[in-house]
Image (spheres, rainbow, N blue to C red):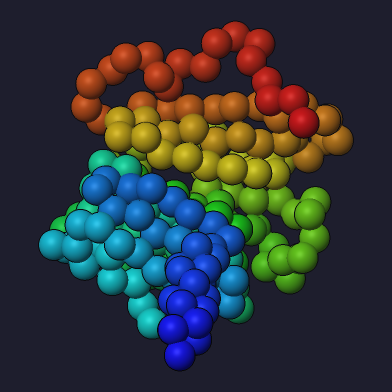
Length: 200
């Protein structure tokens, strides 16, 4: 009997360690289970640790806000973005206009990489654009958001700025980094050093 109880406890602990993705936010953390369910823990005064229930929402990626009280994830089935938590500035609105590859939750802003041609959702060479919502979403430079020859691979938001990495569609193997300043204090975090590129 004791061995059976100990075995069950060990199995439960092992399940709690079984995540495929994790994102640390502002006093809360979110992760994705192998079957796609999002699970969060920590601060929850704005519902930031209460993701939508599985199985209607299976996630492939999740982002917890580092300076705010919301989180967002990309759904596995249709590529839509599902958010939860503080929505005082519209940062937690759900987005289903197109298919998204990745999302990042800022303080009061959310940005995501969206495919331009949703019919090529499984094509690694597809073109992409950036789409932002919430507070100061309109400060995203037009030459980044509406570029017609970019293949964005990753976007990340800090508290006062955001950065995106992208490959040009002309076949270059280098990945450029572009950043922009959004609000708050300026410590030059958005100023990318000249000649800096990411190496695969």
